[in-house]
Image (tube, rainbow over all chains, first blue to last red):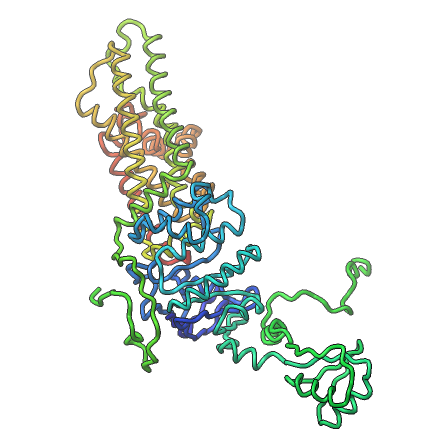
Amino acid sequence: MIELEGLTKRYGEKVAVDNLTFTVRPGIVTGFLGPNGAGKSTTMRMMLGLDRPTAGDVRIDGQHYDRLKDPLKYIGALLDAKAVHGGRSAFNHLLCLAQSNGIPRSRVHEVLDTVGLTAVAKKKAKGFSLGMGQRLGIAGALLGDPRILMFDEPVNGLDPEGIHWIRNLMKSLAAQGRTVFVSSHLMSEMALTADHLVVIGQGRLLADTSMADFIARNSRSYVRIRTPQRERLLDVLHAAGITVVETGNGTLEVDGDKSEAIGELAAQHQIVLHELSPQQASLEEAFMQLTAESVEYHAHTDPAAQQWGDSWRRG
Amino acid sequence: MSTPQTPAPQTAPAWQGAPGPAYPSYTSPIPVVRTHLGHAIGSEWTKIRSVRSTMWTLGVFVLLVVGIGLATAALVAANAGEGELSGENPLSFGFFGLLLGSMCIITLGVLTTASEYGTGMIRTTMVACPSRGRVLAAKGVVFFLVAFVVTLVSAVLVAMVDVALLPDAREPSGSEWLKGTLGVSLYIALLGLLSLAVGSVIRHSAGAITIMIGLVLAPLVIALFMFSSSLEDLRQALFEYSIPNQLSVFYSTSLTETGPSGWDPLWIALGVTAAAFAGAFTLLEKRDV
């Protein structure tokens, strides 16, 4: 269990994390979501005692991180895959971490095996690919068999097989009763792994909700229909009191989950359907709407914007 | 601290206001150990022996100290005329190698702390051991012992061979033996320890190494060009307290008659290093990693 209370971090005038209060509960995967620069990594560094909060407090099972006597057995953290001395072998990297917490040497072999790096254990970390680096970081997080796991953007740089592996790993860790806290800027990724969702933007808390709630509230579900007998279907649906929206390319959309009712109506009136498919608006869209105002770095997509080079042409 | 730190709270922590529902909590089969400085020292020992830069800097150090020390003595033995060496301390020919070699110890000292900032390893280290002072102390202990032992072995080897190569020189006294081996080794290791503290403050390898090499060489070089008589006192002080001159005091071959003598350089180095460590500890606690 991780508890944040009014956690704030300021760098001079700039507020990186603004009065964050939430709880990360055990036994589930909590997704920590926000656009780039939202303050996710800063928050995680404060949780781990790396950055000092300007105000507020964060406690791990009721204690401050730097008071923990056996930190690696409490929390395993993957901050970024590059937090490794490139000249050291994977085995020695993990060994020095294990020794600092009195973890037996045999455990190093175990975690290397878990992440599938046994074959390259004696190789220098600088020769590792991004994915192998992530695996080494995850091995370090698992070293103390901790009850809390924290992953900062764990799927970055992983191939599909690796992404699949880490998703299952996180779920199985949570199923064992551990607290799993994972940050991402990809809503679609979170939808597949997280049970609970904490969304921040520009350091402020935007949502603290269960994943199911978030999906129910934020994703519009609708039915997409294609039919050669468009006029007849419109009449039938209209008579049944179902509102239909015509989209440009010959398809019809009906809000809500009414595919069965529509199918039955069509059958009743012997209307041919080429497509009848329930759809969900992407969570990515919902997430972008939620954080739209708090995105720090916008790309200019306005087509009416000045043409490149306008200023100096005019000048 | 009076509160017990035993893990595995099956209920919500007491400081929490409303008692929440009991949650499932994972309990690891790995035995819980209360960590202490010894663990951190073991970890730092693994770190220092598992990177190639340690082998390179120490290898070059031994090569410089032993190579130059023996070559100097051989050159002296070949060129010295009858009776010329009678008043000389044969140990003093180890000086040149150690002066050059100190650059390697400085480099290793800086790398021990600063390289972790360069690679990002420091975040992993501090997560594994959140007591920042303990990390710095462990680094200091491990580095000092390594630097001291390597310097002592090289210095003793050079001293014994030099004495054997120069039978015409006078027999060094017991205190000269002690200063020329143990004394210089402690001094060089302290110089490395100072570099380690500077590396922790600067957090940048190249910057910290530059500062330390400047500290070793600049006072002497600047003093060399102080021709004005009104600067005579400053020039004298720069000469006497420059690190090369302090090092030569251990061989009783100081540039001047006044200034530090006997074991003084060691106490000066001890004071400066202690002050640097106090600063490094304070900054480490205050700053973000």
